Length: 218
Length: 72
Image (tube, rainbow over all chains, first blue to last red; front, side, top):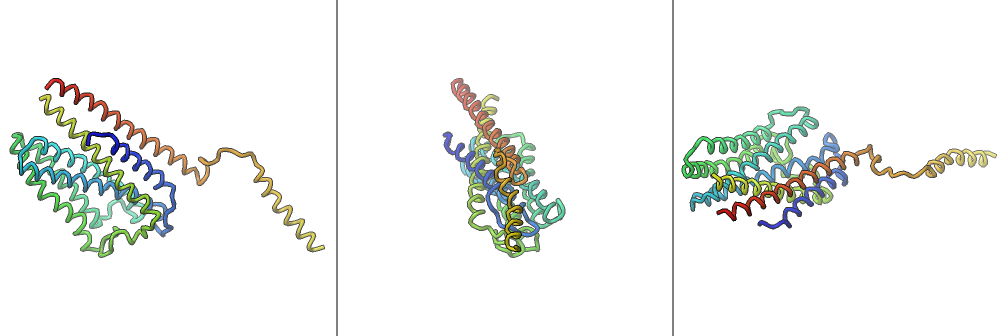
């Protein structure tokens, strides 16, 4: 994957999603008004985060199967970038909430559980830093990661659905129907998700390569 | 008489519309829609700048990797 075409593709998708997301037509809905466009920016952050955490857990399993410095490095760095996207998701979400739910943080189940999911990965990164011995660190943190990933999925997708929540797709409502996600929005939303996932993946490969270089130098 | 007066009235009312159409034409795209396009331009500029920066970083990293590959 050391070629350039997919990086250019990601860049084009993200730029397209930004321009089209700001200018193309959207449904006119009460309360949401123009903030419905946030769908193109807030939601892709979470998809990028989940993709990166999935990459992380895959490499954690691989590194348990066949202990390998490379796998371990990949697992950390994808978690590192995933956490950044998670923080962006939380911040954009609370800004959006301020203007539609009236409060930055209304302790909505979705908000709380999403924050806990991100904290789980903070714990993962801190756990790694707490162990000096490399092989031990790789093994323990890989096991932690394997538990953290399904927990994160449950926190983000399952638990908020079991309660009343302001967030669309929760409280028994299916995914995007609340948004009235029409075909116009799909034309922007899917490229936006694709684009941000690719950009997240790209940043992760850069971090991975830097870490590899650093470890070589030591 | 009423009809003529009405026609004249309509004409004078619509005259300024014609006048507006004859206004000097300017590149007004960036000023339309409450100047939202100005914001769009700024956001896109920042985004493109950051993405370009990412490409530059990638390139520098590739150079470093080549160098360290030679050494090892």
